[in-house]
Image 1: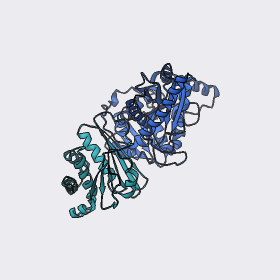
Image 2: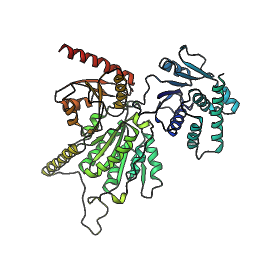
Image 3: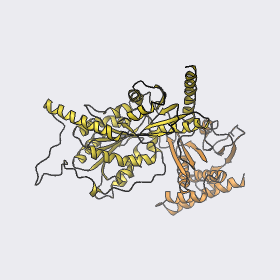
Image 4: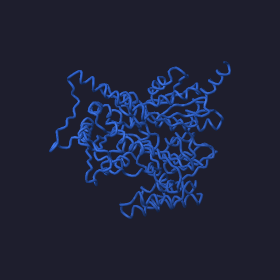
Amino acid sequence: MTKKTIFSGFGGQGVLMMGYLLALAAMKDGKEVTYLPAYGAEVRGGTANCTVVVSDEEIFSPVASSPDYAVIMNNPSLLKYEGMIREGGVIVLNSNLIERTPSRNDLDIVLVPANDIARELGSDRTINMIMLGAFVAKTGITSLESIMEGLSEIVKGKKPGVMKLNRKGLDRGREFALRGA
Amino acid sequence: MIGEAAVRAGCRFYAGYPITPQNELTEYMANAMAPLEDGTFVQAESELAAINMVIGASMAGARAMTSSSSPGISLKQEGISYLAAQELPAVIINTMRGGPGLGNIAPSQGDYFQATRGGGHGDYRTIVLAPASGQELANLTMTAFDYADNYRTPVMILGDGMMGQMMEPVTFPDPVDLQKLSPKPWKLDGADGRPSRVILSLLLDTAKEEEHNWKLARKYETIAREIARADTYMTQDAHLVVIAYGTAARIAKGAIKRVREIGLKVGLFRPVTLWPFPQRAILELSRFVKDFLVFEMSTGQMLEDVKLSLEGRSRVHFYGRPGGIISTPDEIAKVINSLYHRQRLELEEE
């Protein structure tokens, strides 16, 4: 089984972090994995995306012609990737930032009001974790436990609150996806 | 990956100047050198300064490395020529980006000519290694330090923006024991109690310079005989073989896997050493393969080495995407597909 996922949005939205965390978690699951970031020269703004390939066998190309999944954080990204996603694939959209619903009816589309949920949690910086939590719950590509394990590695040395907040974001994202709202 | 492998290979001196897309390495080396008692990291004032610091460290016997991306590597060429002339070991990392000029910061393979033809002035060659995965980046970095010391010559690792920023799980080889490395009886470490040694590149006497040039040439012949290396994938029964290196080879492999699923007999030949070029292995393949497709992220540079290697014995086709474009496996599969059918049709007509 080989699954290719694209994470895409504006620079600064935590798009690369979502992909990195998925790659780390899948590695901990014992999978073959590649993480390929693509971003502009800007520190914030511009477009940022990354491709994560998770597989049971050797991964040849870290580039995805037709990804199985996409996590989309802004309108330009939806325009760019909507047509590329494999039939029967999954799109997880931040519905607070994207008003349009994809026109394809052969995809499983999950609309996550991630900004609203983040506001309830008290920090906009959890938006990406909410999206990732929903994505992982929907696709089962890895477990939330592996994601947590990867997260604790990344936030090592930071304030304990950081882990707690991100963990809350992941949990709320998962709950949202599982409720099927 | 390069950084950790370099430290494990015993690299104790790194000098560099920032440039995208290879700053991950400079950042890593800053952190890695700091806790080492004998480690030195210098963020130099320029690329030229950095390569000259590497010359100095190498002269003193250290395993030394610098890194940059295309425009920065151009600036280092003077120093690389001096390293070659003075027969000093060093490892130089080039994470290629779109060019010429300042170009952009996307992955490209436009520096092949510069890397494999020496790059700087004078009659010399540089060993050039082309990794295609994270694991190979790590392994070849360690190999690069060994080659540099064994042959007393600069070694370049030619990657690109994608190899520079992609992440993959890697199992690192064990660190080398610095004490167990071969001694360097030529190094300049103070002449107290022994006759002084001299390392220079200025040879005003033309006869001496000629002699030195032939000495280097003989060394390059030895290197060419001993280390040329390539990797193949499904070439045994192939009617068409794609030749690509680094990132392009990765993408081509994905495309080949796809066309194999629909029954096309296509294989991959991936040079691991770009200089010396694995000439003989390609020539060997040409006994069975009549069509080769060279795929590069440039307008066609390795293409010339492939043609030279084949000596006109097979047909050579080319597909290139310069400027920082990353092809998808689908795109390459389409190119392979149409070429394959055209070629089969021609064979039937014959």
